[in-house]
Image 1 (tube, rainbow, N blue to C red):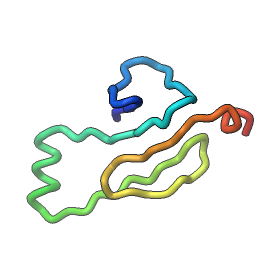
Image 2: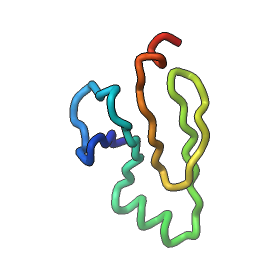
Image 3: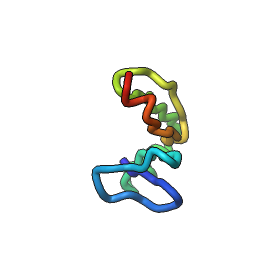
Length: 72
């Protein structure tokens, strides 16, 4: 999985709570080709802190980790 913030793929353990973070599932080239040639639909289910935030079929999810979220 990639975490993208401010158009940069993050490499550390921390993200800023001032900007949205895009979470992206990154498939290997063989996996992407396999799914693309077989008319397969892939759905990702997104959770933050055990709370369900929905599902996507583009394998990405945008979220902003605000201070209020830490208090929950």
